[in-house]
Image 1 (cartoon, rainbow, N blue to C red):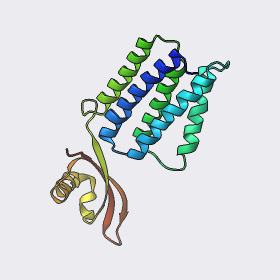
Image 2 (image 1 turned 90 degrees about the vertical axis):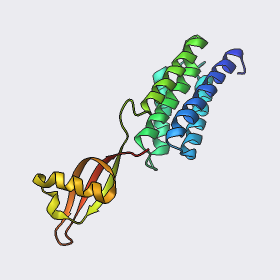
Image 3 (image 1 turned 30 degrees about the vertical axis):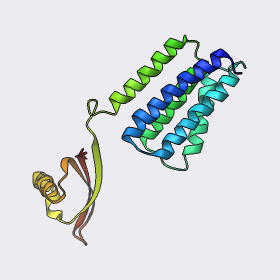
Image 4 (image 1 turned 180 degrees about the vertical axis):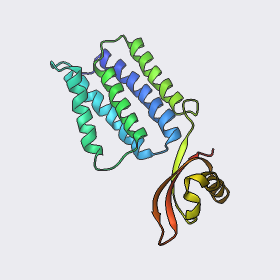
Amino acid sequence: MLSYDFLIRYVILLVGSTILLRGVYFRVSPNRDAVFSFFLFVNGVFFVTYLLSGIELSMGFAFGLFAVFAMLRYRTEPITIREMTYLFVSIGVSLMCAVAKLEYWEMAALLALVIVLASVGETRLLAPRIVEKKITYDKVELIKPERYDDLVQDLRSRTGFDIIKIEVGMIDYLDDSALLTVFCREKR
């Protein structure tokens, strides 16, 4: 098991996954539990897949096995789309490092490309950060479509949010309130 091939692949995986999880993911979403979980997933997937690579299994079978395992483990606790994406990328990177028939420099280059893509994806270059806020609003007369501009101005002055869009949800005329979903730019 401790062959030269195993050690090189594992070092490439450790360096790449540490940069991806600690340098990219943790910088934006400082969730220590998720980073720990993803890191252990990376290692577990790599070890099991590398050990099973001598057995006649297809890459699809190995990926499916770990994807199902990941979904079963995380289905009880809701995780964000970002966390699900990083979990998927972590599993994919582990599988690539464990069984891909690539030269070491090609493996390292692909891992670097994934890290660069994740870094760019986490910046505002790709898309501005939009935050969704649920607000119980007390001025029901402003929720009419023809008063939309007044609604935006009132909410901006009361909350200080840089509002992009407002969606009107449930309206309660007995309490004279409405549930609004407000989309605003995240402040730095």
